[in-house]
Image 1 (cartoon, rainbow, N blue to C red):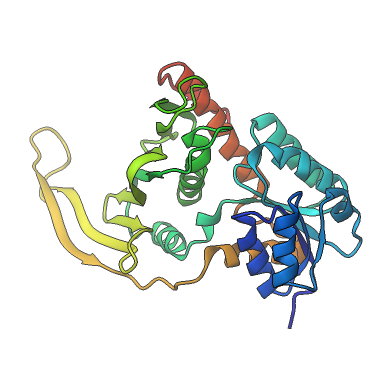
Image 2 (cartoon, rainbow, N blue to C red):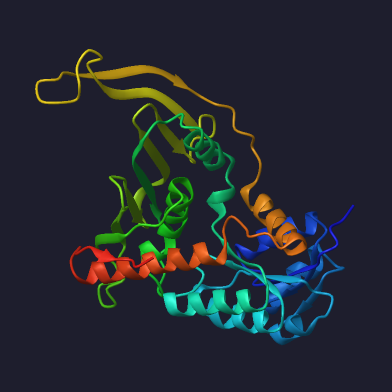
Amino acid sequence: MGNTKKIGIVGAGRWGKNYVRNLAALQTLRAVCDINENELEWVRTQYPSIYTTTKIEELASMEDLDGVVVATSTPSHYATAKVLLEAGKHCHVEKPLTESPETARELCDIASSRNLVLMVGHILLYHPAVEYIKGMIDRGELGEIYYICAQRANLGQIRRNENAMWSLAPHDISVVQYLLDEDPISVSATGRAFVQTDQQIHDVTYLTLHFAGKQFASITSSWLDPEKVRLIKVVGSERMVVFDDMDPRYKLQVHEKGVDWNQFLEPAAGSSLKVRSGDIAIPFVNPTEPLKAQCEEFTRCIETGDKPRASGSQGYANVRILACADESLKQQGMPIPTDL
């Protein structure tokens, strides 16, 4: 039986087609908007019953449309989402939410004032491996979390309107926010522009998130790398976890590794340390599609009024972190307070 809520999509390009496919399968897709007639022709061919238009105003005025997915390029996120929210439509906006903390905050305020769902496309929060790690942390199975290390690299896609950090790091920032259930108090970032030196668009960045306790997270983003890497490591006092999204068989590995003080001594001067290296467990992770789970949560939250995992407020904090990191890049890695 189909879902009673009806969803539209703005943007049916390379990534938008995945939303079209998933929402059509969930029987919630009502309309698709794109300025490119070729993309709309693809929609009409694949899904003849779906209404298509080149005008966002048509989507905004459709009375039987409950929510809209904004899957356009980042510079258009703010203006597109604002039109839809002000028309009373629930919105799911691709990452990053907007290009600045100010515009991201404004969208959050509009959604809140109208009791609308505002969700952000932080797809990794719905990855079953990330959900598994979150469960381990919440149950205390990793012990005290020391740090998180993330790497996201490939050769391309090189963009002209944002650097590698804005393009790639939102995924990893959102995972760190979710796993630690808090936002960093400051950030620092370094990097280099090698290809687009005239515009100083960084191809490689190294971002560090500093938290109120001892924890920190390091995030490497590069679109100038010979290998495609999608790797997250979580290091705890009891166990360590490796999530390799490029490994087709062993995406998640739990290492029984750590460093212990001699059991007969207190951790003080003169105490001895012992490196512990045990088994490696390969837990079963249900191979569900994260985007499908994300689409399902969007429609469910519209029905129930619940706050989504990838909420607008979480998306705002993500953009705020990126903006502070940009400032740190300009100041050669100086730590910048996030004020979150």
